[in-house]
Image 1: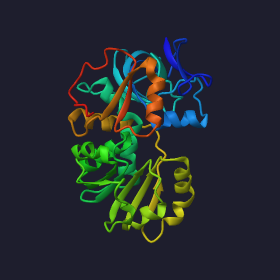
Image 2 (image 1 turned 180 degrees about the horizontal axis):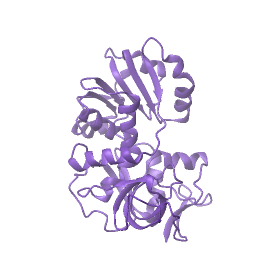
Image 3 (image 1 turned 45 degrees about the vertical axis):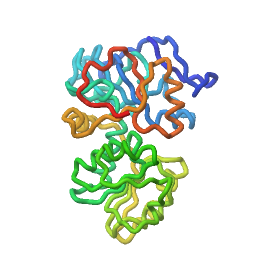
Length: 325
């Protein structure tokens, strides 16, 4: 099969297309014919940190069709269309086929395209966990989403509105139109205004890939508010882990999120997408042989939406969910 393999001598981004052996499943795994993959920050950050998957194949957010199943698999059968999160199972999505335990997957909904489905793992499920599990979002709350234009941010904005919150979104000038179209009640242009010095206080803050001072976030929380730190530069991650708990006093909470794959969460957001409660935001599409260029582009940090790698040509039979460009 064809796969994009990590090769430290290759450029760009140390990835190259090669022919490799098709994976063989065990009794508890399913073999997937991959259709689409969405790239995530975990992919390029792992490359930069030298954390390479055992088979040297990146790609964790996949959609595709089940080719075969192990004898102990209970919930899937050949020809089932699925969406999966491989981040806890060795990655491997940037290939024509991948194997993983059945708990990595959920059923793709019938009216959702493979491309749209692939935007959900990692990005949408991380947003869900941040809002619902870490943030305990409630109807009527005022939520601030810092970094609303990326994969996690776009899903977080829509999910917060779905849960009945009033949403203020923070993004750059070029992403204001998209952010507004996704339902933000107010948009702050971080190139023109420092939201951490404003007078408005928030019940819940999602800090996505930002590098603002933790004290700045704490300052604009309501007395019993919560700030959830998601990703960001390594320095920001370390600060939030080591100092966040020190700032969690007087009712205000500073939390970090280390998301794990969860098929129930994946099925939950897949149904919301299928019903039109949330939309897939796809910015760019690449074929498999341009995966290195796609990874390089995403790593620059300015993609207003998801970057998709299409493994199979016929990936978009279902077109109900509109694309935002």
